[in-house]
Image (cartoon, rainbow, N blue to C red; front, side, top):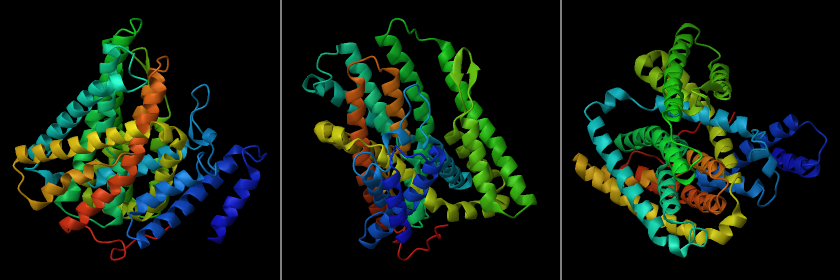
Amino acid sequence: MIALAAGVEVLALTGESATEPESVRTVMLVGLLMIGAWLSGMLCERIQVPAITGYLLFGVFVGPNLLNLVGVGQITPGPHGEDPPMQFASDLAITLIALTAGGEIHLNSLRGRLGQIAAVLAMHMLVLMLGVVLAVVFLAPYVPFLRDIGGAATWVVAVLCAVVMVAKSPAVTIAMISDYNAHGPLSQTTLVITVFKDLVLIVLFATVMAIGKGVLDPDTPITGTFLFAVAFQLVGSLLLGAVMGLAMAYYVEVVRSHLSIFVIGSCLLIALIGEQHVLIAGHECHFKPLLMALAAGLVMQNVWPKSSAPLFTTIEHTSLPVFCLFFALAAAKIDLRALATLWPWSLGLVGVRMLMTWGGTRLGVMAAGMRDDWAKLLWLGMISQAGVSLLLVTLITEKFEDTTWAEPLKQVLIGTIFINQIIGPFGFRHALLASGEGRRPSAAPRPAFG
């Protein structure tokens, strides 16, 4: 606590106009977010609230809305699109989280169940997207910034909203499974659906963005080269990640030492590769760290499991400060002033999404023939949203920045994501405890911070 208080005081004194190098301030902010979010999470656990809620609340507290210790310039792109100073820390956290997600998928245990999972996933996405599209189109005449944009634009906005609402957070799922030391079919199925859904979602989002821009802007035709570039990014990221997974497993098999340093170094390498841009079919592309790390973890767990086991144990003991940093950063980006103005629309979208999530998942469970008690709780693990959703919203705003609806839509969607961030962990916590797969943090062993 003394160290945290000292860090806050130093940051408050230095402010944005400080003369110390920006890199020094960024390092101080990373330390503040890790320690402060961790302490907030511990406090929340004491009062039977998910630790993730504490991480998020601390991010809001030190972000631009309140104390402004983490300023807007630290977490948002610059005027010419340059990455903010804290972006690399966020990318590193996403890489480690995705590596963990890949390592949690045991393909052997899914044999005979992939058909069921595909049925649940398809029905869940179909019902959710259809419900959100119809709700947005029906309510558009009553929404100030959508009232006069025209029929074609309304449908484009509705489909974009639906795609964002489909997005789920692998980071929240992994963090909750880790916090509650959960093992069993509910946690495993929730994680697999979350990961596969994000893979499908990336392709779907790229397609919708291309078609939507073509519909609204005659000067931006829909071409096959763009879709080819998107496919190259996806397939290339997965293949490169698989190769890196084999290399990492081989290192563990041969060396078997200094695994903490090796894990951090591997995540740094993946994050750095993700920052490199190449020109494919006339479009600027880059490999996706999320997909690379996901493929690496999946290959290590299912191709070389015995050799990779020590590595995943190390990752488990390293993950806590990473979760703290990731969720605190995500919450710091929330604009509470905009949310205060547009909250009725955000809340309405939350309600539609939750109802469609419940209905779509239950229909999927019925179609798949699942009769297990835990299957009734599956929808509660589909509520949370975080980094992927925020990324999609940012890309929509950049792509349609010349429209009148892009900015207010961004604030509504971010408000919806923030609300889902807060209530989602409560739902998944109830599902894990009710199914008997999870244990309360006080009863479960926790990795040390550091």
